Length: 256
Image 1 (cartoon, rainbow, N blue to C red):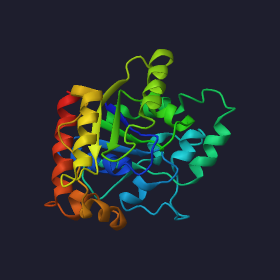
Image 2: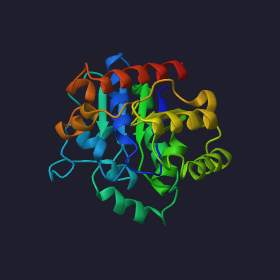
Image 3: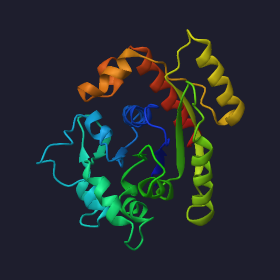
């Protein structure tokens, strides 16, 4: 049975999608059958794996799944990376979310869709929107674990408490098995005292839930998405690639 991990932070620009894409890439490299579900209407995880989210011939997407026009199995496509599949999305998902508000089972559609394919995978990663939305709640209800990337900059923990309260509410009412997998410090710059201070604050707040690996502010990590590839494919010897590989090994250890 697949381990389902949702990646979320209600703040944008914290490395959420980059983390989801690169974690999926390295899990697949470690021979785990992995599915990346792009559940963010921005579609950056889709384009981050080289799929044009604006292509009219893209075919079925996560919008079709949430509207219950298609099963998830028909949306999933293979990528050029062995063991890594993608369920793509387009900006249309935002419209689907609006229409979902008045529909039955509006909180559990993603969970129900995943249940039909999870036996085919070791890991399923869900890239969620940077907001506390209906899509985000669907993702939390569908998951075993929540992964929280936090940038090591000013206001890093702003909004995190609200997100954790939402997580507690989901655990209480719909998914008691949901666990916080951990907090990943991103955009870490060892040359600045600010990064060190914020990382220390994150560790103080989350204690042993903080991942030992930090993701550095790295040019290669920033460039890779524009080429439609994970950083490990773009430059496997870069600091960013090595950090994501190390982080993924921590994820594997925590989900055994």
